[in-house]
Length: 160
Image 1 (cartoon, rainbow, N blue to C red):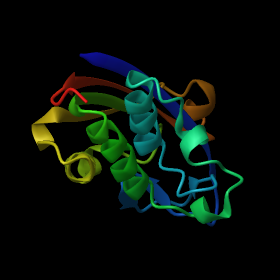
Image 2: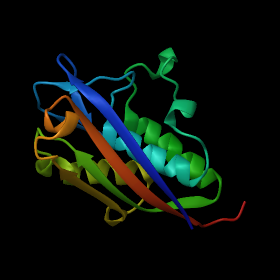
Image 3: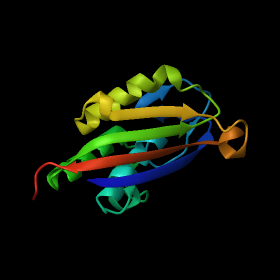
Image 4: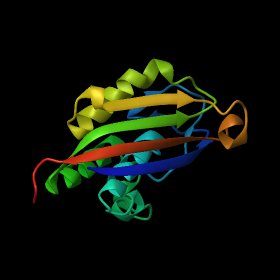
């Protein structure tokens, strides 16, 4: 078994869509980034890459590469899942947390879990997504940005 952790943060700005866990959420601001700036999916990818000692998402999807401009992070997650599978491993489970003062994430969590599990070709019960606020503290509490944390475990299924 291998275990990895991931973290991501993006600034909230006007005139951007808010995409979290592959789900477009109605909000007056979106996250700033080279790709779709999906903090949850980015943290999950980094946890998986970390578990496999494959560096981080910046190594695989550089923010100075025009082909990743506006990229759909769920598609990038599929790529990361295939990297792991090609090395004989499978994502066993993911536990993640979105840290945001607003908007409320609860109405979107099941859809996020479904998109993530489909991208990784794993059962939805292997993906947990939680959300919390920081009680008005810090950059997430003052609605300047949103962050996410993730941990995953991988299991060996085919020794390569």
